Image (tube, rainbow, N blue to C red; front, side, top):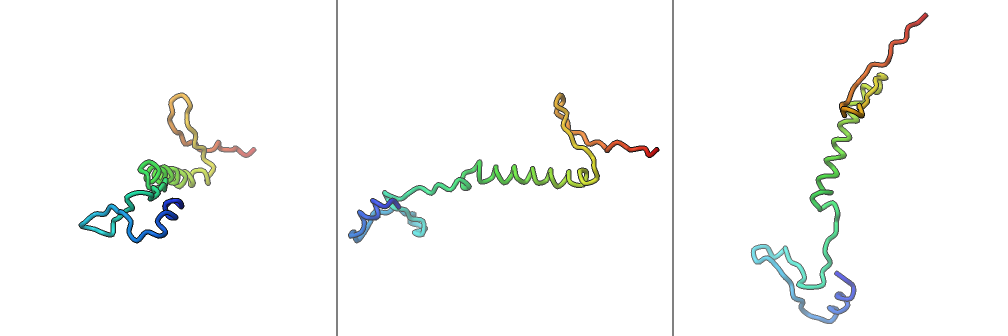
Length: 93
């Protein structure tokens, strides 16, 4: 609730509310109540951001064994394909 509205209601016995008759627990002030602005309750951020993080995490998890063994994971800039290559074999002389 905004501070000016709160101050205005200081000496008031009742306030107008909007409620659902079947579920009175869901009630809101008729005026003066601030909107909840939680960005994670928006569809794109609430589901999209965790989905992107999961995909990135799975890619890192899948590529970790290859990178640990020294393999190269590259993306071809022309075709857009991902390639996994073994490191070159060093011949001892």
